[in-house]
Image (cartoon, rainbow, N blue to C red; front, side):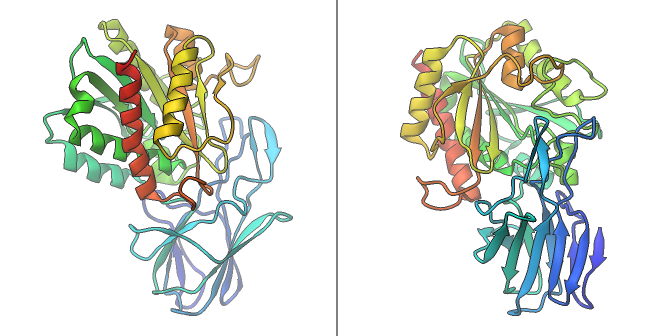
Length: 386
């Protein structure tokens, strides 16, 4: 989408991960930009916490006002005022690679809207809800690491849109402990992917971490959503962190492929000592364990994360219920589904994009990558000490 909004200024989203809804010109230097949002297969549960666009032809040093609007939505069938708030200023980049947070902004909870006041340092800049991690970013990492003898890649299926679904193995050996890591079930949660890259780089650089542990990594669960600048649902509208109690290779081939990879591993005699799906939220941060069992493992995992990483939980260690929505099919998360099918020790971690008290600022990609490296060290300690 290329929309002229001034004689010289254009707003562009026609690139990997770009997304905006309506664009309204208020004045020569003031624009209202709608969050496009994403709805599920039933037209419910609208999520509007992703926007990513480029401004070209901006007047250098002259203030532009950009209002991010159309924020209200619905989560688990309950209406909300939107996930974008005063706690979640966006990031800005002048080269598309290095990001920092916008410092001058106002949040209006009445409309609601996020007003950005930008004095551009150059005529071109990018704005995003959080620092993007696109399919192109992952492709660059793949190109860099594919020659490493400790690394192996399998294509385990195709997305609805025909994109490859990948499984990476680092280390090997049937008698080793095995850890599974899953990233980017929801396309807006880019911090998950930055942490994933940090984890992969640490595993390849640190032979001690793979000497006695095999690492199985699903690096990006929703490539279609990432490409189109989606938020939470696949191309057919299905949440890839629900529906783990449903088998439908047509409507949600991503879940079918991912579950199938775990099943094949188990059928071939493999075991799963620890499984983690990493997510982002706006302001909450926590670790959630499986519906039953593994209480001591969970307690120690939580303890190590707090001691050795930037993890700063907003609530106590918790455990999943059997499903997120009783009485409805298609409402199990990955850890609920894996426990139901195979009683696996699955965990879900949420990391906030808002202020982190350990960092004393809002997180950026370098923080996420460092956390990924810290995370695999913690997980290694956890499984090798059992």
